[in-house]
Image (cartoon, rainbow, N blue to C red; front, side):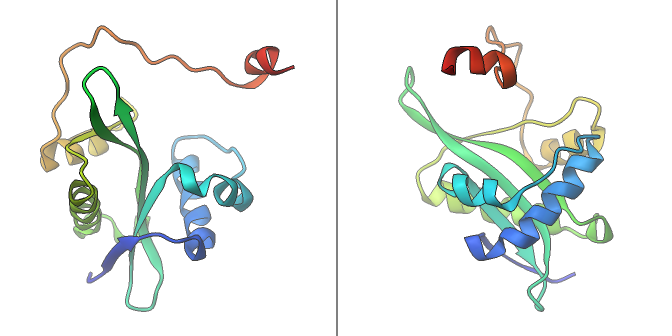
Length: 155
């Protein structure tokens, strides 16, 4: 299928919200997806879409840049990639990733990370086919803080 890729804008929020809900359900995460959350945090992430000639969003990717202070390098951390189930295995995800990688590279990013669920072999194989490599065991662990435990510091 022919599609066009571009950076998403806030005008794309309705379509993005629908795709995030589908992606969350795929991962058995039924957290409500509220468009206002995207509006309030739009400046915190970069989103990209693939769309049909009719303007229908058929894939999206989102992530954020961050600075590794110890190495003084800018990295991009891809957090989400979703292709509409009716359009998988048509090269759309690959085309969107090529667009995203070039756009961020042109903006000065030279290092890219991607995370996926360990059980999702198809996602892992897709990223490997693009040239991503698994990093050797890192001495760092990612830890998570949210919810009631976080509120202990806020209240």
